[in-house]
Length: 542
Image (tube, rainbow, N blue to C red; front, side):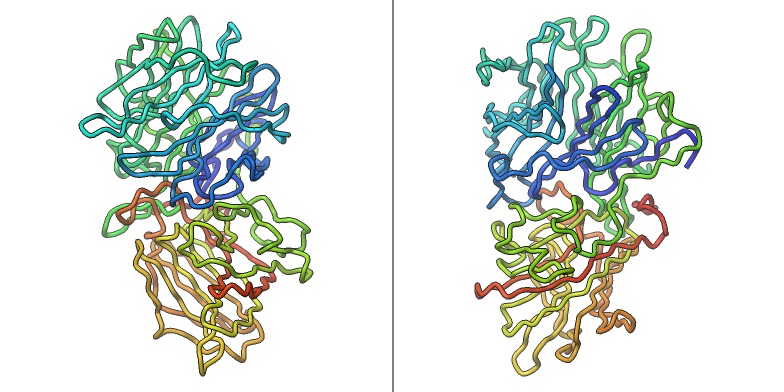
């Protein structure tokens, strides 16, 4: 990496819809989590170059109940702000997706510190998603979100709503006003005040290949707003070979020295015969931006395409390395609690199904629902941050029935995943094989199953190499053999299948007991090794 620069993405892997705020010398980025728990991870930095995890905000059941939400529903586009000595987080829980309806609830919580304690949630409205708060210089606070319209013959994205919030009453007051409506799809509203202008930043074109960021401005908060005469501030819709694709949905932050930066999402595709696919999901990037003499925002590097390397803010030491934020390569499960890079599906990890103390030095999963369940899965996973890596674990699992399974899973959602699992087959004892769900179609690769009843332990490995995924197994961690054929890793992406998809690939461990006896599976460790020897920067492939 070039000295004095930051490298994108600053948060690799599934970190979409970044919301950025500076409080004193510290910068914070919060991102979406959809059906994953805990919700809304936060990363902290003092220079915009080096980022470290700062926990999750929605980490209590009273703040987040996702049992039963569909894939890619749940927590959408949280927005973080700071006002009157408090952090404010406004977030959406989506419980119905698709068309025509989206059942949406927007909530506000506040805290004196990013670590909390966070308040009880205040219900705001259900009119649409992508909420954010604007705190005006006169002390008043305003909520923005899109208006969703389910009626036939009407645009679903029906404009940007603005409504005042009364902190004393803990409620919205007055009537919502539509401050901007366009025939084209606009969402993700954020307002900034500068030099007598209210600037409205918008995500445009949907969150796929047509994505972008558009600016508008007005002398009055309530409008009317004029659009930037040059069109999109940021987009790659006209550059299909650009390394950062789907660029859009952003927020602004100003440094103490008066420099401006844009946090936005983008994706790094792998190339397949069916077209590009973004296995790592939508990631968080930063761009340097400047204001023109006539008061419009522009990328500092010129044009409207995102850069992989961006000049760091003033004061960052030249030559100082700036690796993308990542997770520890290995977890030996020796801590009394889970490390912060782990996630579960829709509900918190509880001692009912996950323990770190029952068998010291091991993580014990007790089997529950199937991998297709929207309720009680025993699955623990972490974001995939490179498409060239090896994922390895070792498990002690003694199933006595075909309904009992455990192993290593490569996950996109309940409809699409690859699973190297141990189970029991009558007359053979323990067997190891691959099962999968391919856009909802379930399959078992029985012809490649191994008889492993005499294995003391099962070492399991998944190797990602661009668009290829292959499973391996070993009884001792030394002699490895392939299990099943080469699989299409690119299917673990937003861009595969016929469903709405907004997340990214995860790798993890899981256990099922469809008979309800909660048989345990004990995992000794879990490791992700980057095959490029780096920190996951080579996420995309040309």
